[in-house]
Image (cartoon, one colour):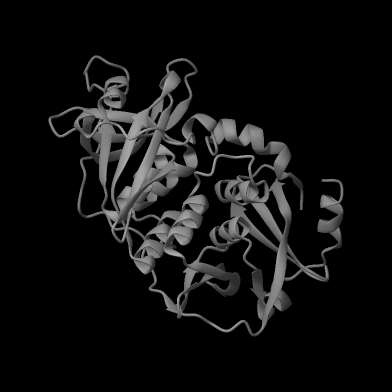
Length: 345
């Protein structure tokens, strides 16, 4: 199978796809004056034409209550999860659905998100997380903030300076004008499976992340796990968006901690919950299913998750990564080729 090292394409991917862009991942500054905030509602996810390059820019359209709209650029990764929620195009829980499930389990809520601009007209955002009697502001990207607001019925608030800089006029003579869909209550998000009782670790083999390989001529990445004895490899094909979340977990300190798994890590810390393990446990409809094991006080639960989401979180908190023995017997591979591929990294 032809592949390239994931790290060698990371910079180009970040530019082309928008994942991990510094200007969109900058920590939020002081909270804007509440009187300068305006409530916005979700309008549509669309592409706009970049005037300077002519390229298509993934964007979201937010509607103002008195008319007009704000259009904001987002990364392709964020665009896809926002679009999937609006149009129910993806039946499996995504990263932001996992955030919603964790919040429900840990007794947390998100009453609002705040979108703003900073120096150089770059965007920033934070979510307001309510935990017991405490409200905490957590920095995230604009696209991630909106995706969370979709799933948690949070208010979307924008500062007046953001609205002034990104106002979108539907002038009939403007080449940028485009029709957009009004918000609808008919859009249904992915079905979320309820938390289930934690399973025993019997027949689970502890693994480690060997690395990531970029598949040639593909938007997919190979995430390679290997057992500690290096007797079997377990490759998982994931998207480049998820690949970046895993890669940034392998490089602590190199990226701003504002991705979904970073937010989940903060949620666990504030709730004093502990991530006991993550695992790839089974296969359904030709798709690997993972689980996240949690302990909070005397309560232990396990929730379903995409393996890549579970692994990205485990890397950030140092939790063990496991794979069910049956999956290794059917899908495990000789690790020699993978070990050689990473030998010089």
